[in-house]
Length: 226
Image (tube, rainbow, N blue to C red):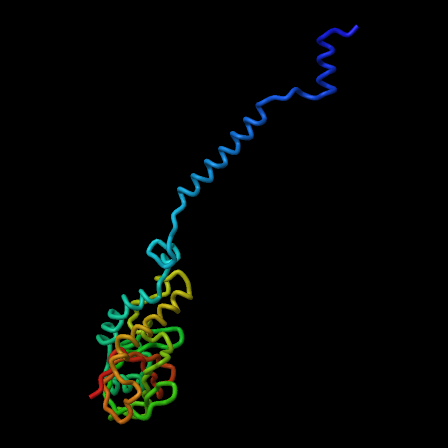
């Protein structure tokens, strides 16, 4: 004989659990929690305009800003160190090592010298170079860069105040040199008609890397036409 309790158990096994309101309540609670989280994320999200001061991508090294800030100091340093071309040439010819110790900044690919000179510009070359004839300067071919492309890192290396350790990596270090060249173009070369220097007397202060003692390629920081 089956009593009522056993009948109820058998009934539950056969028909499953009795319907309950709890599963629906839990589903609604879970859904509500998801909505709250999404709203919190939306409210905590700040829209940042690309290129604005809040754009974190702007926080790294800016070559342009570096060039603008640093070029005046570099220009001043080169002008202060600059040696008359004839004096410098004689010193290099007499003893290169002594000349570097006295006037130059040692460098891996050659020492850098700061120089000042007055001479007559020859014909402009396609690359924007001018050969400058300097009185009493024997056995040396002097050329200056006038753009549009300014090559080399002479401005960066000429004063000894810019070192690799000041930058995060080699790319930044290289970009610093390019930035100084670009700033020089804005400040110095933009004030002169660099397409019409042929036959004119020019006063130049600049820097060159000594690779060939008989050929100097000068990057100017001052270029004045008489």
